Image (cartoon, rainbow, N blue to C red; front, top):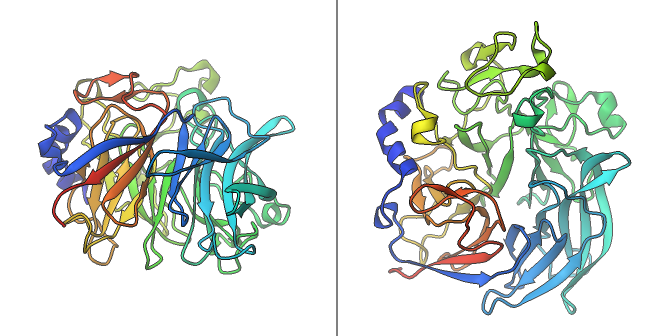
Length: 456
């Protein structure tokens, strides 16, 4: 979608951003009800083969199983050694082996969490064995350690693909942004062969990784800039949503810089442009200001601002950058023209926190087949992005759903295709039904469900 085309539809998108009625947001036929409450920053919610919801609680360091029929909870494990000090670190992603209940050799759950490594904070993936009789996780094995972690833009979403490889998103660690604005953004920096050989994963910032289930580098991973590593794709800002289609296509959602949240079709060796490009390469609103490269004044003497960039900070337009492997997004949420007034009209971002691919057709929600579902943190709503029949392009514009005063952190789909489970943050800012910013949340630290009660 070009910048010109999006500008033509700007009034539609401003209407979505500033608020419409419940009926206008296509929520007819749904009921909302809490499933479980009192959770401590639930971060991941996954439908398990045991017909339970598996939840990671980011600040309680535990994996909790929730019975969706009555809300009963059971702690499967409390994980020692998790480090948590800010609003983004702690116990994060969870992935269940596709044959979790089919035998002891495959009864595994994988978790990603931050930990202290001497004087630094890092991210690791740990595997646990599941005992179906007791409902507990035990026998921990660290399969990879030393992954990048920081106090912003951690990523941390994890899935197992149809190829039975483990996929993990890692953000750009907040470089060149807010309180980290003097830290160089390294999302375009790739590891050397020597670093990979030494097990040094420091150059994995701003990436989506593909790992064997034992943490090793798959032999069919792409060779990028002459080096094969765990990296599947790079040039990402803060990808927090990963979702696979049955055909093996991998989709990702990614936070943008107050504009241009992205929905991406992830391709091996793909470069997704950050920090040189945000969203489409259209010179709309975003210019790369490289604060760490400030010339006449040292960066640490400056004050960060998106709108007032000092002359000493180099700035480059999106179209001045080129790369043969650049992959533009399927869609943005939202691209706005350069004269968009953030003060008057609000941020053109939903802060996408996760992603799911909705494929149910017969017996599911009419008209929803082949859609991406994208929950948001600071807009208190979800979006549905229809896809083309082959899943490779967006089909029209995003459709707003489920406006409440909550921060939607993750979602899971019931196999019946008619129930959507959503994990909500325990605290934080969001915009409510009247689009005003608030920290008074409707369902803090909960799993809520939206159930479609309409015709099949």
